[in-house]
Amino acid sequence: MTLRDAQHLCWKNFRKINDKLDPEKGKHWTPFATATDLLEKSGDIARAINALEDSQSDGKAETKVVLATQLSELLYTILVLEEHYGINLEESFLQSMDDYILKFIK
Image (cartoon, rainbow, N blue to C red; front, side, top):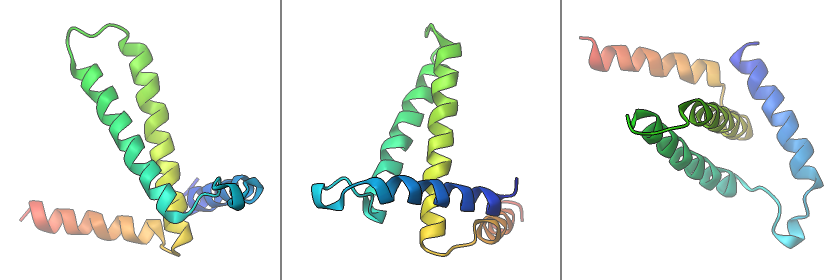
């Protein structure tokens, strides 16, 4: 699956879900609500990484599953926002990689 395919798949699923929600009751996912969800997931990822890096922590296998789930959900959210705004993730990703190389490897 390419990034473009993943972007389309996430958007299709997002539309299926969002179209069934009732905007009148505030259950409709707006781009802003999606972005705030992205931030919440980022916090969950930070907590999971902190727990995995804590040498005293028990349950690392379970925490790794939580981290994998949160990272996947974060990617889904990013792909939905990219599609919503008509951004080609593959192109922007490749450009970012070029920018990182130019910035850090001179």
